[in-house]
Length: 102
Image (tube, rainbow, N blue to C red; front, side, top):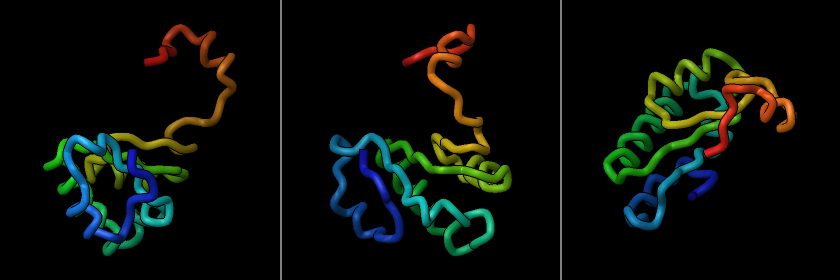
């Protein structure tokens, strides 16, 4: 897992396909991607490069539905935050019949 991945696209030249399975985007890049065309274009480039290397892209925290929609349109592999679901104690999740741990 490579965390806080953001504006340094040269970092892709240093990555090996076998070394990184997940890129966690920098929160400051994710925060306004739904309002900032430059951030959206950068995220599109990152997603494309990651896909070519079989690396999954994760983004968060996602706090507004517009941001969640933009990230879905950009094919980000996973997101977290209050726009996805409100925080819940693990005990209440475990009592839910549709909850599972992978």
